[in-house]
Image 1 (cartoon, rainbow, N blue to C red):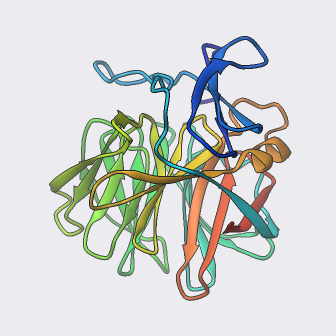
Image 2 (image 1 turned 180 degrees about the vertical axis):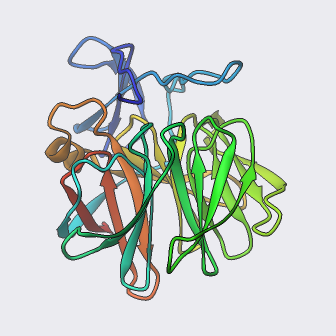
Image 3 (image 1 turned 120 degrees about the vertical axis):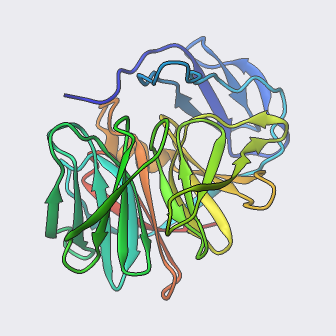
Length: 294
């Protein structure tokens, strides 16, 4: 069972050249954006959502204030091509990963160099795994529509407890003081890591345009990095203002790993703070990459 149903409703093209985004038809005839001479085509898709939640909409402003930055591949590593990656983090030389899909959801410890799964805890078939964060010695995992999160001992994966939240769980990270949760809307929610009570919200915008479908999150060097569901870019977000400072262009990696599978989208950001290494991957991707921002 796949989580998403892709629809060819719109194409958004984001460019890596200079100047503002200009609204124009793409080569396929669908509306989109060009910027300079090089375009990056990003497909819009559909995700079933909880009742009352807004659906994704394509960008409509004629000008984006955020620049587009390329990334350079430093090294690639094996990644489980059956892992429907929902959350990713790096700690103590290992990756920790949350995977999704009912009946296949898990939290796992992964060896970076080989991609080998060293430890795994499988969720009950009724749960759809989502974002993952590490706070102290506890792994905290979201689920999508179940309204429940799980708390594990990092070393043993022993279940320590659970907590409730609403309406949906997508991505999760932490800034040293607070948990930061995304739910597919332009709003990020801050949670107390002890009580899991909401302590504040932040609306993410590109210029004056709210950014929909905020997904997997990672806190990197004072910024929130966010995957945008069904798009081949990562947003660099100012946690003080919510403004998108830049877009990271990951289109070449998506093309190399998707194999035409509409489910195999970019999703998964991890950061090695000690080694200053940034890792990215995607759902069902056979590779994970260490990248540098150009």
